[in-house]
Length: 142
Image 1 (cartoon, rainbow, N blue to C red):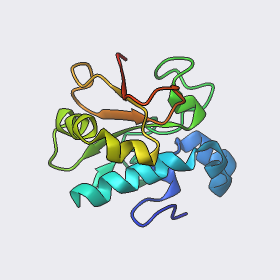
Image 2 (image 1 turned 30 degrees about the vertical axis):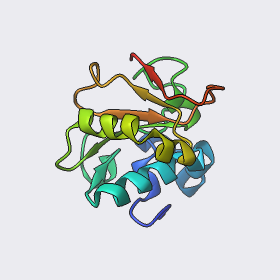
Image 3 (image 1 turned 135 degrees about the vertical axis):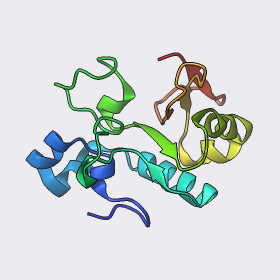
Image 4 (image 1 turned 90 degrees about the vertical axis):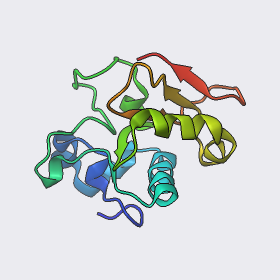
């Protein structure tokens, strides 16, 4: 199921959830996270990888994580469909994080509220749209 110009639903959902719910898996996602991913894709005009299990890859828990998933924190924003971990082809994860930090006014309009500290996530960039009750970007440690 295509969810935006360049993304399909499976890129945001783990295989177990998709097997059980199919296209209804979209119910588990905050639509802002799809818009954020599409914006990053459009901004850099480069491929963005979230989950790739559907294409034979090994990435499967970088979008929505179901309750039984043992990856990450028990109350991670991934479990609420409000987070994604991604890579942009040819861009270092810390450089994407710097772009979000330096252009937060643009990203904030899309719903971005939080990233993980790039010092701790050198192989991916985490972003989410949790409620923070702040106008500033929240930078958390994983």
